[in-house]
Structure formats: C-alpha cells, structure tokens
Image (cartoon, rainbow, N blue to C red):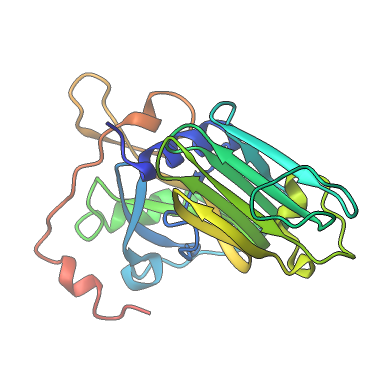
Length: 256
C-alpha cells in the first residue's frame, strides 16, 4: 500500500502540475538539489554548493491554488448565525467541518502565491553537465518554486475521522481558498484521524518544479537530456536511484 506521502504527492502532482513539498511545511528553495524518493524530494546539496551560478526571474502569481480530493471527503461550511450540526462547532459560529472516509484524502488551499524560477534552463543544463562528477544522475534540481503567503493543508491518516475549524465571527468563510485566511484566526475544535495538518500557516513553499536527466525508456540508464521531470508522462513515475560519488562530500564543504 502506498504511503500517505506518496498518495499526497501523486494526487497534487496530477492535479496542480507541481511537485508538492512533504511534509507540507518543509521549505524548498530554488537551486536545491537532491533525489525524489517515493514522491518525496530529499535535499542533498545546492547549485551554490556545486559552484553553479544562475539568475532568477519572477513568474508572477499562479493565483490562489486550491484542491480537494474527488472522493473520501465531505465539507460543511457554517456561516454566522447558522446551525448545521458540525461536530465541535458551536451553533451560530463561523467554521468548517471535514468528514473523511478514505485514507490519504487531501484538502489544499493557498493564498497570496508567487512563483520564482531559474531564468536560463539551457545554460543550467550545460553547467550541471560540467559538474556531473558531483551531480549524480539520480539528482534533480528545483527550478521553480511557488511561495504562499499562507496555506492550509489537511491529509487524512485513516479511512474515518473528522476535523473542525472555528473562525472569527467577523471573517466570512465561503470556500476552500478562505481556509488559508490568516485573519480568520482559526481554532481547531475537532481533530480525529489526520496524518498532517497545517492551518493558515504563513510563508511556505508548498509546490515546486524540477529538472533532471531523462532516463532511457528501455535501459533505465540516464541520458544527457536535461529536462523537466513530471508531473506529466512516464517521467513522473521514473525510478530515481541514489548515486554514490567519491567527491560528493567535497560538494558540501561550501554548503550554504
């Protein structure tokens, strides 16, 4: 059975066209280098430590990114003065109740997003090839990050449970994007069966894109083609084996 991290990674990669950070509060930085293991990015070094320079460019804002699993979740929103019988939420209070009926169910909401990317990918590919002794073929490079001013991420741990948030009475909560409102001052009043929860946390990097060396479809060996890896196509499920190089430790000597 797939782990919670793998379920989360597969679902968000497919729906939002980005790799998600796991755990969701993990900070991912532009130029980070590492491996993808079971749909999790594991940082090992950085372009700076490898002596690779690059320039960045602002990609603008992708907007408020939201997602909820298509199955295994019911969401009830209670406005001020209403009474919907949401467990853990007082009558008349503003809040949201979640009922989970499947393991790995996801609720994801961000606000005030901005994307930053490495400007010249062709140059990056050439520079990384020159560092191949220090850059194992299994490594990938974070080439774009999505920063969120605030984010809420919920992932269920089991096939039954629930989660309830109570908001400030004067802050309207009408949809998923409102779950990341910092000024809602959400209070958790019920928490049953969640693997992880982040509620309106600020200054996160929940999503990113990566480049790496494509593997030959037949042999599985890496090629010299440095390109975007996932989430589309067979590359999304390609195995990334750990590389061991004698000079790897030297690359960390100047680690930031």
